[in-house]
Length: 316
Image 1 (tube, rainbow, N blue to C red):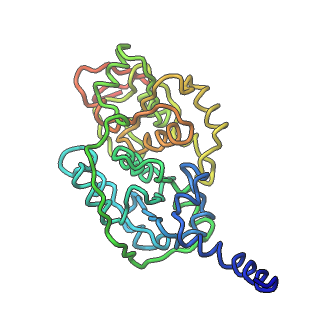
Image 2: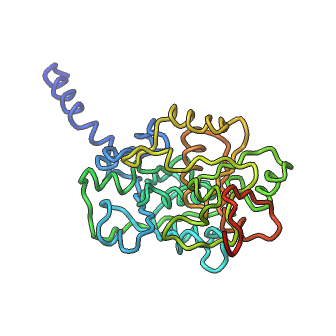
């Protein structure tokens, strides 16, 4: 082949190949080094990438409809991700139907985001993980708050995707703690650590729930042996998650360094899902989330309770 033709061919490959390859290769391969978080800049750049699904899981009603990340689909945590009659996570059939509707397969890269610094997006990641969708499920670092603060694009149009053929096996119990598990730790029958990520006033028993939130428990206080690191200490002012070094120091100060299994707990399991994500997906610690949390424990008859504030049922 003449040298001129070779040079033209090389030039064409240099110009065309990267775009062609980017259009064909799976998103998961392109972001292999991104870990469990993706940045707002990365997501905006890859909105149209093949093999990517963006899912909003927020708590404020109507927020998605007022404007969402382009291409995002909406998931209502209190109906889509749970069984609405029994207090439980979505069962295999319900979860499989949801994931098929979202067009998600086991090799799909999923970016979850939401309000409240990704509380319920992290809950979604925790539910997804129980059905084996772990490494390809990411959180948008900073969530909806950071996306909006940076004035990145929002859309009000519905997103239509081809349904997948996802099949779900029974949820794995490995990432979920039950009342019996935390009782075993409280009674020193099991060598695990309980991380209570509620506010200091909730932990001490001064209040049962945050201001403006319904009190769903009868008793106030915390599970014996648990330590308190409020979930918000793991995030920066812009809602992004702190660096691994900062996180390790934060939790080590409370005696949590990954040497023992950890159980995260809060009020109904959403804030503790955020801490579960930080500890397990970012730091790699062995962690289970206790989604029964204080709503279950604080209503259970005969369990040991530590109440530093001295509050009692029916008065102070």
